[in-house]
Length: 417
Image (cartoon, rainbow, N blue to C red; front, side, top):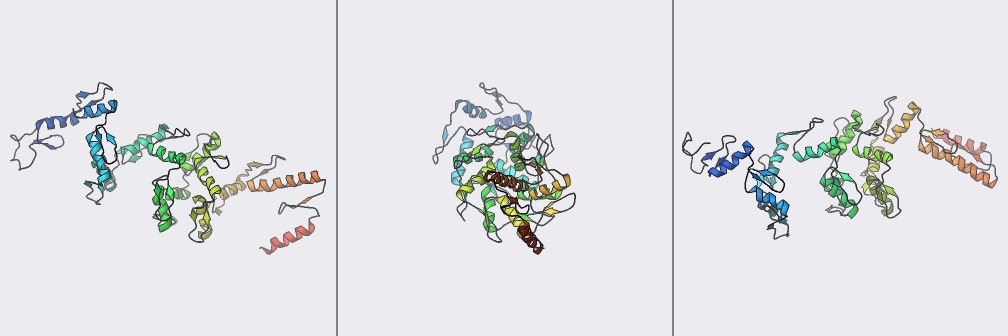
């Protein structure tokens, strides 16, 4: 410990005469220096008799004990909220005053807390001091690595009391609960549309501004959201990081995996009050629009509106001509993943859709639906005891032989080429 008497040079006026040898921090009083040095030695002399937790400063102990007693002596005159420590009370008051005393020297951004400024600095330095021991991924924030580690452990400690759904983070739970309460506190000033999630509002506002700041370096396509770009890039790389533990099927997006897992669990916790039909979360939101008639997603080219964002994205490809889903066997490209899946069955020979009447298998559900019309027409003919002719081109029944009809249909097909 260096004091005023043993410093090698004269102490400048206004400087602190007591200096910590570990971190060079200065102090006016000896007791302050001794208390500070316990941070480096790890000494914690003040122990809570309730839970055994120990502290290196005496002032920290009574603050901690209020967590057991529930005492909150510091009350805000603006909103009535009470706090157990003076530091928390002081920090809270800045919400009302708007004071942000901690300024970043690099970009000028200001913060309410010093800890927020320290964390913000990492956006400039690129520092990520928290590394996951499981997968090696690094994070700038302690809270992010704690939340990330729950992906590996499967822990979801925050449970919704309404439907029992569990979440890894408290913010996810709070946002989820707005589905049940209907609360939408984040409102767009342009069109008045409100959102339950804070992050949805700036994403939505780009619909009005037309801004698409996230651009794919491979094909040049631009997106409003960073997550959309990340998902899109997996089309080029073929990466499917989300794997189902039940059947091994892999997906590009976590949301796709969650929707798929409902096939195994059969879970449909969201029930429509209009028709009683049950859905998963994402399908429930889209389904409700079938009753309200809401179509919030408009095509900027032709003005056509859609009830879901995915329908708009698919529609956009009719204008752009983009076919991002390519067959690895023959190279043929498609504008939807479902079209590619159907096409792949030509190569694999898979026919997953079977007729429950005659057992005939089909590659596409639409082919099965057309085939089932034959059974319906034949059943109707049996009931009426009439002879019926079924056309394999339009799957309609006729009372007369099909030769004139087929000639007409064939001439239409030929003229279309």
